[in-house]
Amino acid sequence: MARDGRLWDGITRSMGRLAQGYALSVLIGVPLGLLLGRVKFLRRLLRPLVVGLQALPSICWLPLALLWFGLTETSIIFVVVMGSVLAIAIAVEDGIMHVDPLLLRVASTYGIRGARFYGGVLLPAALPGIVTGLKLGWSFAWRALMAGELLYVSGGLGQLLTMGRELMEIPQVMAVMVCIIAVGTLIDRVLFQTVELRVRRRWGLAPG
Image 1 (cartoon, rainbow, N blue to C red):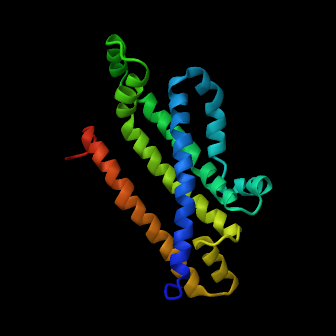
Image 2: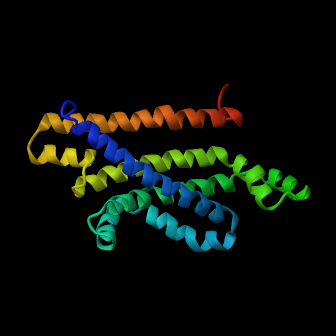
Image 3: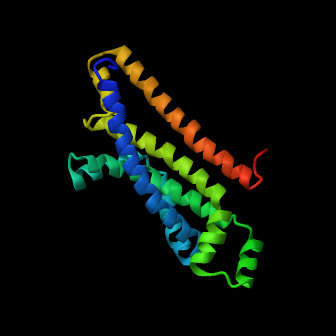
């Protein structure tokens, strides 16, 4: 597979879908988590729904995606988004809820409100929880992508895995599985673990 380019093509396609789906998840999940953490009415109204939907396996969204978007790239990206956006929102909400109340009172005393409050006080204070949520969302997005590609012939690592199974090519199946593990581990260790460690050190939550 590596020699004929199929493996590299599969990695490229999968990573392209992952980048699109994960970016959308962050753009939706972070503001949603912020709203859940700051607006009590929305938290009471939406949090049970968000938690309930998060418990739904991401692959359950694929039939609905196919009905809405047909056999298109959008269907896979939709599954990726639904698989990760709620995890990000819940983690961001948790980070917001665990901000030191004293810090919020000090900001209120000094009249820090609006964009200055969110950009200069709340989000930096909640950053460790937000980074954890982004890391968690990435892992859910990666799993959702692989599940979607396994069931929908669309190119990518999931399709290579399905082809290996259908052709009874055990070496191909094993090679793709190793590749999926390697890519996931590499991104987690090189990107997210590095960022998380730096943030925790910045806030005194990890040894320097």
